[in-house]
Length: 346
Image 1: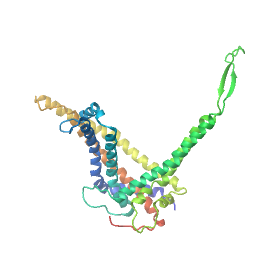
Image 2: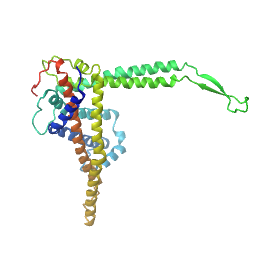
Image 3: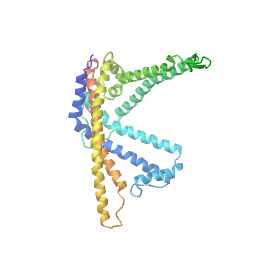
Image 4: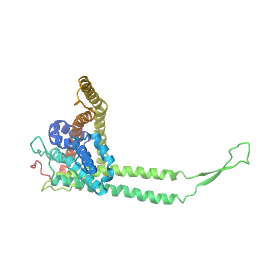
């Protein structure tokens, strides 16, 4: 089979554009929880450090960091790693919650569950995570291990190479002043660069070949006559690997352009507008003496951070929808090699 570069890109963009509302409906609640998750864990650490309950109602966000720093010794290694494990697992669950229904919608036209709030985690989500881990381990073994062995063996071999010693006469008017210079062979410094270059090529190549394995595994239905690994290798075989690289570069450039627009245009405007609003509120509060007027620094940080997170959420939804459309296009183009039952129920 031959992948269509133009068709795959337009499929991805078309899905992200036409199904954006559905993607936003599926993703807004998990992404909102992802915004509050770091704040929750800051106060959790502050509570563990102080030995009492620390909440946003009595302690500012930045003050919570001070509480943690002043009592860091109270948090033992076991407690720290337990909390970090819970934090990591929670993040993974929230991130994959909306990805699986998006992949199924893009690949098999399976309508996601109705409702304005979506947060689910099941066997498909767990299977996707497990396959992601296995693919990552496989790529690491096939790339990092050969690199480590090659660098170790080449270093041991090159250390035994003696450089040639040349006599140098720094003073052209005198042959009695002699200096020596040791010149090592040119390939001594080139070998590590060549090895790192081969490592990067192998890493990119294997990532392209195995990218779709977790997605194909997550959207697989009973009765499908395909193997996720074999299908991923099939659609990326031959020159398709290069076509996949071109497709990824084009999509990355499009997302980079969007990032630049958000980073240098939208976010500065939002920050300036809300900064002026909070400065105006503070000035108005100072005009009327009141014991209840307080510094809005913590509140302004939270509100501006929340607004920026909303903007980031819109961007993330688009990128994830783009990713789902890309994966769905690959699945459909590889459909001639699988016995997939399309249109299964959610």
